[in-house]
Image (cartoon, rainbow, N blue to C red; front, side):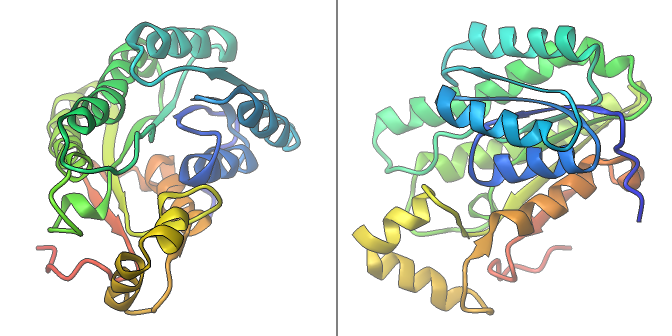
Length: 253
C-alpha cells in the first residue's frame, strides 16, 4: 500500500532513540524530509546521518523538553529549513517515575507542554499543507491502572483527551489529529531495559500480562504510527490506537 508520504515534510520530537527514532526513520524510508529534536546531540547526529541515507533532507536540534523557547525554536527552524511542514509527531517524554511531586512537574513540562508548544508553533505551517497530520504518542498506561500511581500515566491520559479535543477543533481546518498508545516496549536504553535488571518482579509481572509473553519492539510501534500519520489514514480523525500486543484488557468500544 502506498502511504502517500514521499516528498512530505515531517517533524518528530524525541526522535533520536527508541520509538521516536523508529518513527522518524520509517518516515525517512518512506520519502519524508525529517526533523527531530531530543536531548543528546551525539544521538541526534547519528540519527540524522541515518535518515539522510534514504536520500531525504534531515535535520536535528538538541533541546531540553522543559525549555519552551527551545521547543518552539526547533519547530520554527524545522519549518524554515524544510520549507514547510505536513506531519508532526509529538513523542518527547520524560518517561516513568514515581508519584513524587518532582515527577509531576517533570512529566507535565516535558510530556504535555512540549507537545502543546510544538503543536501551537507548527499550526500556521500545517494549515498550508494538503496532507496535514498531528500524531500524539501517549501510552497504554493512560487507559488502565498500571504498576502504581504515577505522574507519567496521568499526564499521558491528559494527552489522550487533548488529542481528541484537538481533532474536533482542527478537522475543519484540514488538519487530522490522532493519538497512539504503545504498550510495554523494549529497546536499547528504554525504561524496561532498566526495570528488567533493577526491578525484575515488576518486569516479570508485566510479561505475564502480555498474551504473547514478550515485550513490543520499537519498529512494531513505528509501523502503526507512520500509517496513522500518513495520508493513507485520511479517514482516521480523533482516533486513539492502542498498539500493545493485547496487553490492555479493557474492551475498546
